[in-house]
Length: 424
Image 1 (cartoon, rainbow, N blue to C red):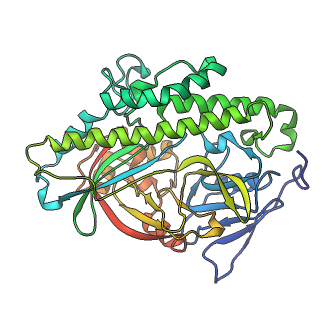
Image 2 (cartoon, rainbow, N blue to C red):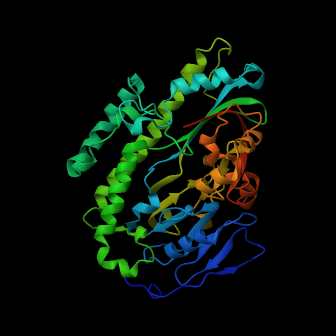
Image 3 (tube, rainbow, N blue to C red):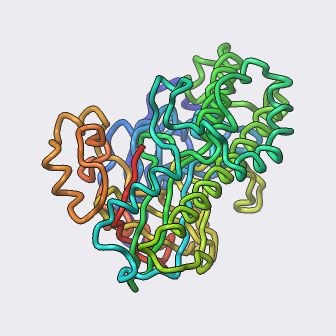
């Protein structure tokens, strides 16, 4: 567990090279390569990046994306390659959270002038938000589970039973009744128009309550396992499992299962939404088979970088290998992007997962009024009440600046502008 410099404060110097798109942040651990030209990065996020860089398990360097901001343990918007070890808190509790987008054959002229009905159709098709403290009357879960979710759960159930066979305390709360549901917070469903006025459906969600329980449980186990080494950890939330440790293989299995659940969750939601829209009499017949993207941005996976097989944790980052498609959403009032990866090895073939917050949810609620939010979301059929002020566009970085800061990581394939937005 020892590493030179772990027990003393580190200095964070910035080296600027005009020929590089990233800033090189030198620490007493591994370097940090940060794609933050022209976008703000707060001191708390810098400190978290520095803490991760001190860990003896990090491979080569830590990569920070332009949407980087403070998170729990590891920074949101960071890419952390590790040798023979995984940091559960870096993966987080919304395991497999990510995006899905589908291009339809509809065009802007096919949409009704009043989009309230389209929004209502989506809200009826997908449970969203949370009520009754998550209890029996929770509107964010299914009362009657649709056939798609039941069929998918049959495929997922064996893995779930293997997990709870070892960790019986995880067998509580909801699983199949939340398969195909949105959740709350920054999760959303949107209808968007691209540069050619083609209609897209896009959504953002993850592994719901079951993923949260798995993530929370293994984060706690990692902390307990490393309690004897806390003096050598820059942050106890960075406790990690090493290969060969008691819980390592169990965590790998559980996190991979939760990532499959998250991907399936998005697929079911998308299918239910499209079914609902197809049934609308004010829309012409359409298909949704032109282009589809389904990508994680909170996850861990095995990859080879610089000749070594490592675990890559993307906490608020998308894989952007050569030719790979990804989704980078803006805030409720800004544009989003379908992108194609350039496979930049220095970012470990990664890009940002969105715009990134510039303030906390509490600060946003204090700073912005309902009138501010209504103005910022003008032209978008969405909630315009105090309950979504923490998600108002002003709480996020400029998506245009974020995209400019990572033009060596991805190229833009489609630019999307939302016309309908459903929030939890």
